[in-house]
Image (cartoon, rainbow, N blue to C red):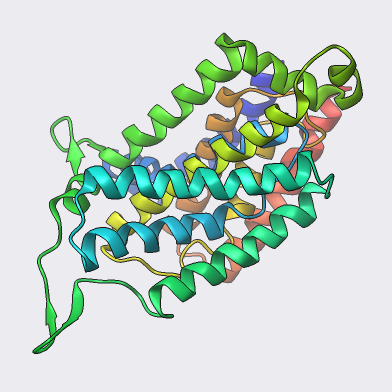
Length: 318
């Protein structure tokens, strides 16, 4: 039933797209390929957010950690020419470490998740701005002889490329891989059962011998790692590290999880439902864009439809 409740909003959005097709643009494969590419970065954030929410938490820092990852990767690779084999694990480790700090604040210091992740959101954004000097890190760099453009590293082109005959973006495959990793953790490992137990009833899980603190720290660390990966992909798409990127992305990630029907109270949901929620939000934005709705109208309609979808799912669950 949960899957059907998540699918109905998606089917409704697809029906709207078929009716208001933007002079037939909705039926072109390029439109659907663009939707998959556009939701992939935020979809990675949603994958990590799913684990945190299932564990009974919330992480408002993912947008800022995405910016930190974009700045860090660009600083290593664009500005200093560091090997991608060093830069990539370093940035992913930074994201995981930042997430772990939030997890420790929640699990050990018993600071509410909202406050702890809000503090990390502000700190990470500030660190990204400090690291970049308040400017975008791009191919336009300062040298001893003045400013000049440098060649875009191959890793940026590779991450923003399309494969399988130009039909699928690499970032979409990375989104699918992120979802697969989360699926294996939640559905095939004992750790996943622990996540559900902690989110379902923290105290009962503790009394049953579940290492609740470690589970919470792991959940936030994984969320931070996926946010850093999303930041690397964002930098490749924008060909720069922008400390201002990712603003509001945490809200889109939460919206994707909620649209899929995962309970914000924790303990109930699936990563597959988050994928459906990601597609729902992505197609909704695309349909509104094809029909030339202004950005303001799209934001208002998206908010209204999100509330309607949640109310429908809650009513259907009774």
